[in-house]
Length: 63
Image 1 (cartoon, rainbow, N blue to C red):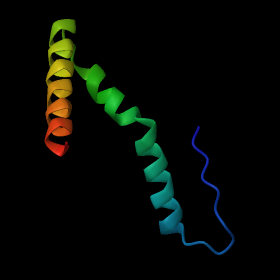
Image 2 (cartoon, rainbow, N blue to C red):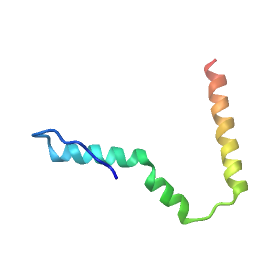
Image 3 (spheres, rainbow, N blue to C red):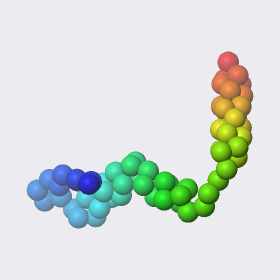
């Protein structure tokens, strides 16, 4: 359960913005979307390798 503390006299829109930010950080929506369709383990591993190679290339470019 997400709890957003609201200060006295705080704008409702600002509180809603805080709630949305906290909700995004939990990753619930991302997980629901990933569960809608099955992805094979080999595809997940291939994507993870591609991400790792990309990150490594970025690090090498910085150095």
